[in-house]
Amino acid sequence: MQIFQHTLTRTVSCTGIGLHSGRKVNLSLRPADPDTGVLFKRSDLPGAPLIPADVHHVVDTRFSTTIGVDGVVISTVEHLLSALAGLGVDNAIVEVDAPELPIMDGSAAPFVFLLKNAGLTSQARPRQLYRVQREVSLSEDGKTVSVSPGEGLSVDFTIDFTHPAIRTQRLGFKLDDKSYAREISRARTFGFLSDMRRLHQANLALGGSLDNAVVLDSHRVLNDDGLRFPDEFVRHKVLDFLGDLALVGRPIQGRFVASKSGHDLNNKLFKKLLADPSAWQLVTPSQEEPTPATAGQARPASGRVGQVSAA
Ligand SMILES: [Zn+2]
Image 1 (cartoon, rainbow, N blue to C red):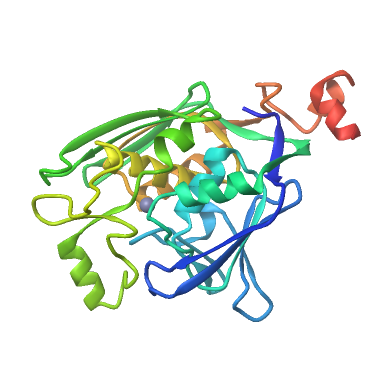
Image 2: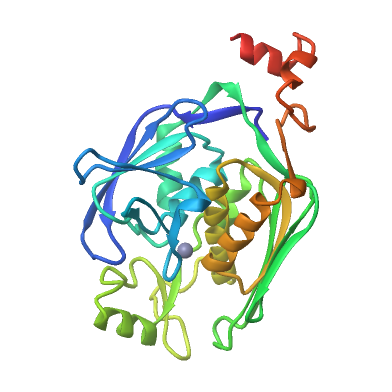
């Protein structure tokens, strides 16, 4: 884990279509000051209002994660947030001219490509991360999700579908400098042809197609090129989970275990965790110990934290 916060070295942009509208969306990712976090900016609206990426601003989790403030919303934030967190970006402005992010190819790989083009810059402010201190769990309708203390960040995810092309899949993922791009980012979202027809009739998912999702009929995968991983489905669930988790606003150290969980239950767990201060401590990666407000003064000036605050 890097000690210092990171932002983008330069602004990068791309264009794609919105999953729900099927319309063109322009996206720019811009550098931001330390302690900004990730801010979404709706450049198509008067005054270009800002929506902070924050678990308390989640307003809808039915098809994707939507966040909003005062009625201004931005949808399908989880794939980009997943890429930002997976690559270790703390601070960024995400500017879009639509109420949803572009779906790209349904994975986070195009965002990883963009972020690698932007480059990352270390900032003169140490990170603070949540270190989980005790177990917090939730279950609902046969779905479960929990977090317990653990080294680094790991996610153990299980899905269980009756569909013959999916069945039971389980993935244990541990985040390090390279693992996100290699193991998770390329996994695409997936959907069933029957659901897509129903959504289209309801004027939803108008942009959804074989170009931005793995689509299954009742027997098999319909995409000509097949799957990117034999277990692409559970990998995408981990991708989504990391995107939802990014809404806690800081890196987190803990061991997550999820079974059949989705955006709604994920968000409930993260809120439950944050609401219980006895379940976590704020630490900096250099110290690996709690950082009360006085910690900076108590540490010798030669310590890493002291050097940063003097810079
Ligand atoms: Zn997804």
